[in-house]
Image 1 (spheres, helix red, strand yellow):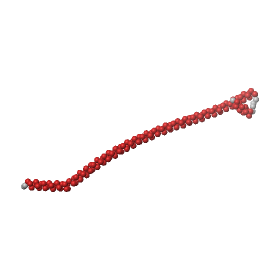
Image 2 (tube, rainbow, N blue to C red; image 1 turned 90 degrees about the horizontal axis):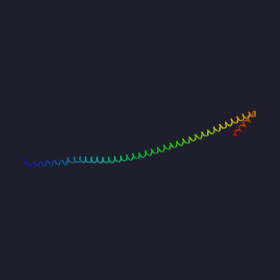
Image 3 (cartoon, helix red, strand yellow; image 1 turned 180 degrees about the horizontal axis):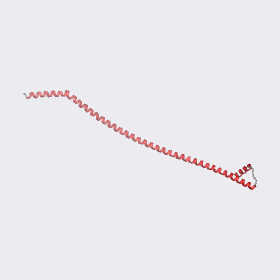
Image 4 (cartoon, one colour; image 1 turned 90 degrees about the vertical axis):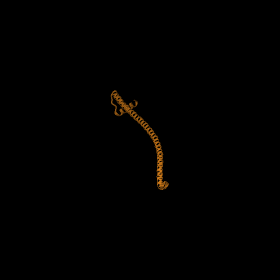
Amino acid sequence: MNLNATILGQSIAFAVFVWFCLKYVWPPITAALADRQKKIADGLEAADRAQRDLNLAQNRVAEDLREAKVKSAEIIDLATKRANQIVDEAKDKAREEGQRIIAGAKAEIDMEIQRAREALRAQVAAIAIAGAEKILEKSIDQAANEELVKKLASEL
């Protein structure tokens, strides 16, 4: 066996193998690697987009939370002011009601005093007439009695 013929045969077989691999084996492998590389790049890009979206969402949530806190503080302030206003209105109404009741009571007391005075005048007049009758020892008729009572009441 000749060493040169063996090397030449092996070289030709190796060249055919390389050509076969380059023609039929290598393109699907490189295509699969390219697809895999593209999928990885797309996945990383999607992860970056998701991270940016997450940051934006967190910022929006934080801003919404701040706005909600401000609005709730405003609502609480308005409610407090309204409560104080209602309390003040209730105090004013109670004060007015108390003054009205006091005025009514004073008017009623004045009326009772007036009635008591009138009754007292009538009693004093009756006593005076009784005393006058005893002094005069005669009875005066009812009309004259009423006239004397009115006259004495006006004088008292």
